[in-house]
Image 1 (spheres, rainbow, N blue to C red):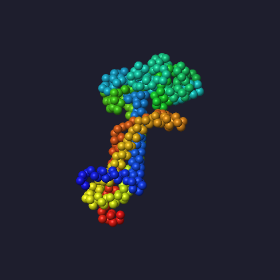
Image 2: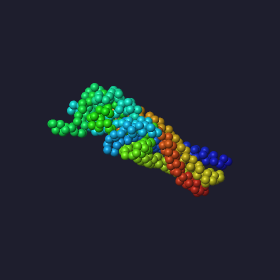
Image 3: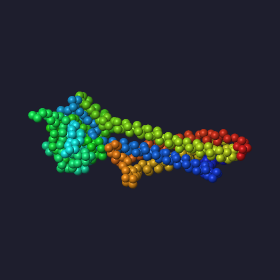
Image 4: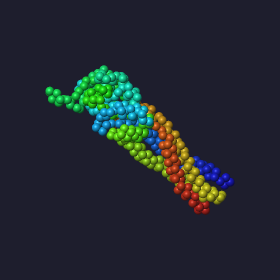
Length: 417
């Protein structure tokens, strides 16, 4: 007992390598480490996938939608040129572009699909969002005034069975009075391109037209639906667009991407929180297996404990000896689980693609999950939280067995040996 604070670590580590009872205690300790490793790894992988899904969803949404919109209260914005001049002069605003959005139906032969029509100004559109960079075929510059060209989403073009150069018919819900009665307004359009945003919602239900052509079809005159804003920091969209409306004197309807798609991100955060709690229970079960392991070691080492007490070891020293074992098990399981979880998370997309190719199935349906890949983003704060909570649970699990070992009476233990 000449080196207080050192012998506890040496004896505790030695007991984990017990060879008594054919090494059963060592086997149980190894299973505790394995269970904790798997629990920590699974938790890190799930959180990383949720983070990657949220990050990918946000980037894809911002590629096809505006960071914020400024619209007239009556549905149209007549003085949009003045509002645009004020907007682009505001700090944090990169670009403000006019747009028209309206509902319609697009037909190609017997195939008809409902769609959202977006009228854009091609030169400005290329500065406002990344949609101009998502073109599979054709170019957004083909949307010239009077050309009556249209660009379709990939899924919509596939469902209609059309390609670049084919003709489609756009049917506006507004009607026109004719000698033959009231008929819906229709216009024959030429497919000038196909875009793929990676978001099924937009690839299936969005078409692009020239701003002036859209205004003519929907009879909006010089008005537009509103202004779409591109910002330096999309996370500041609610504040920036509200301040812009106030600077214009009010009387505008404002919105931003955090409000339009709030349900997506709220559901992701809720799911992430629930998964953390549920999988943390798995980690807790693995951590509290340490209790059983240490209780078995204490039972097996009754004689050794008695001898240590006889040689002068204090109850606190005995307590530290067995606490060391739980800490070593927890540290080994936590570090191994963190490493395994990070490694798996960094390669989860390749692993999923390999499993899909091997079994001939698709794990993610873009119609349901808005994307067909399974991205993962390792957030180091999440890794530290998971590792910290797992280690704390392991440390707490050592208290009872260590306390029980410290209460061992040397005379009683030696009498029953």
